[in-house]
Length: 304
Ligand code: GLN
Image (cartoon, rainbow, N blue to C red; front, side, top):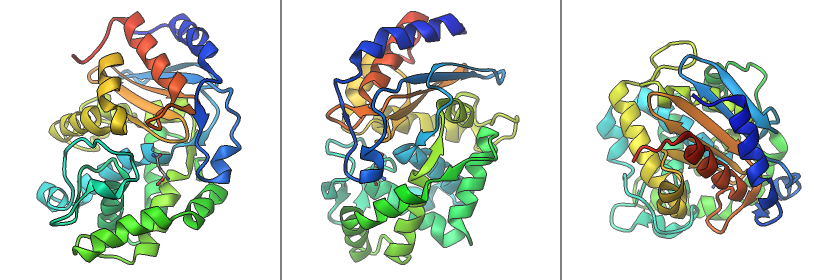
């Protein structure tokens, strides 16, 4: 199990990388984030959380929310109802590419690119009365932090710049793979992306992925088999077009967001979250990836 000192060493080691990436600038609310941040937190399956650097500071979770959404969908639907609407294959394109939608049936390649996450949000919309509220409540419960909020400025700014995501949703609607009003689903999707959490919150919330589906309070959220399947999808598709590089360097199932956060798990042992806002060319945190690489090397761990 990692020690506090190891986390401090990881942060010190990667700090010189700050300044080498680029903060997401597709919306003004994200472009104004302080780039000089780096944090790491680890939650082990006994429920202990430790951290170093800026690990208590909340940031925009963005696409990390796609893990929570898929988990929610798994609790609401039978497996085939989900996988008849979205694929399980890694992508070779950017996260917001229209080419991710297979053009015979309108199926997105996987649930972690925007197209797939929008279908998952559409599924949730069809089953839940107040999806925004329910998602936030569930994430608050998972992290044990009742104070979590969704940043209205970020969510509204996403909505004002939503042409691409709307185009993806309408493309899928044209194939009959989108049932609800596009605007309503976009609003819910952006609301989840705009939730603010710290590395400590996220490592706690993701513990179920390391603990055969059991959350921080010991409740079975999804089954052990579903957890294994989720981790397989994260290992192959969680880092967009950088999934291969991430497997090679880090060797853990993981999910990144353009806010600079990355969550990763060592099944059976721990969940980890790193945050540093500057991104590499694939849209993954540059120093965050390096921190996870350093962490796994020092610990001598990898799923491979
Ligand atoms: N809200 C972002 C979008 O839909 C999320 C993208 C991401 O984190 N990769 O464009």
